[in-house]
Image (cartoon, rainbow over all chains, first blue to last red; front, side, top):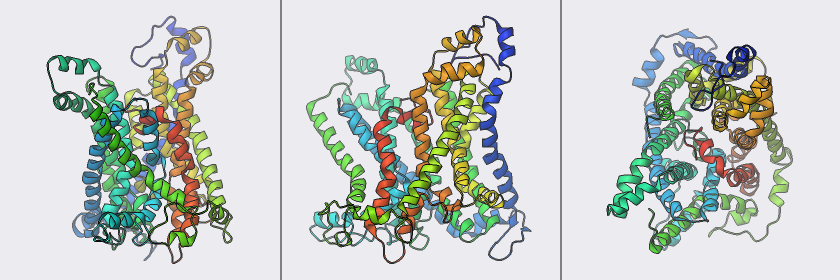
Length: 315
Length: 279
């Protein structure tokens, strides 16, 4: 384990025994602080959470925990409509929101690929939303969505010549979740653009040349060459965004506060409410654990995919 | 897509123009709002460009409460937390990254385990972290957020730096080892200087992640520590929202992010995918 290695090929060893002696222990010392810190946030909280999942601990009622076995999980999965509502909202944001991000991202990346020197500047400008704090993005859209004085309703009214009045975007249960989705799409579509563009630029030109010689049309080349080669990158993008959406909290907090009622609660937001507003610690821990399981499954897919890519199996 | 007909190019440019409007308008709107008077905000039709670009909102928003909105406190706390997070996660992280890249310490499994901790849902960790910090009296202190942010930034720093170290040719370090340099010496005198651009990019990413963080700041602080991301939502609520002043604090809060989007473009692909895609 102590040989010095390059990215792919182990290097030649001119004098292994002396170097081994000098090097022994050092790589481990290099890694140790990081690994210990990470253990502190994974193993300990995991055990802590796991222990809490089997108790009922309602701090608003009493500071004493009583053992309830799997009751928390049963309550969540079979008796908690609010949990399933939060799951449904999260699923909507994943399917429709991330779906839109992929479609818009692909279109914009293809457009950017047509641009010449202006591309660098355009990409930089497009990326501004990604680097802004989500909670500030939520604030920006709170102004945009303002029902009386916001520019969005004004634009809608102007374009429809006053026939459509616009919406109370953050207060109307019919559109509030859409408002959150629009904000998320605003913030993360540029991320998709960026990685898909990187993928487009790595497609070897020879493939297109060969297809052209064979008489393939533009659309044909797109469906048969470009999209299949982009697929691995799009999958990475979807997996990353899937995991992020499960954590979506800041925008909900700032834009709707989960309301009106609980119509826009995401799973992360509902967990926060249960734990830090209602202080049902056991219940929250069980809910956190369910999310952990879902995220772990997706993370394993992501990691497996990346591992195979590093080994050169996937394209 | 090699044949670029002019029509195709024009359509692409038109789509991009619409997209650019969509992605930049909310930022433009907040910056403009930060210069608006209250009357200009509460006007219908909305005011797109304020009459005067006076700094009134900024001057009123910056002082500590009760005189102002605490913008300066937010700036101070966000800076302390982000700079400390950046310093610790980059120094601890690059060491580990070097070890993973050059010695394959712990094999693939250890480095992938490190990556997997990045995907932990923060809300699952928040509760235990909150109770621990409460016990050791770290709530509402800079240190609690520095620790929380550092731990969440480490996997990112390690994977990004690992990629940069792997890109270096190994021969230089090899030669130095043979010449009797210690592994520490090789790391500090040869490898680290060679990855400086990557190191700077990683450090800036780590800074901005801590700067933009919200959930831990919300849960682990009360009044002594208030980051910019805490101050902005805390001012939106209640009866009388001073939109102009909140927008002023918000505008200050996005300056580092906007600057980095423009500066870091070369590294953004790698940074945002944890090295899964090398741009």
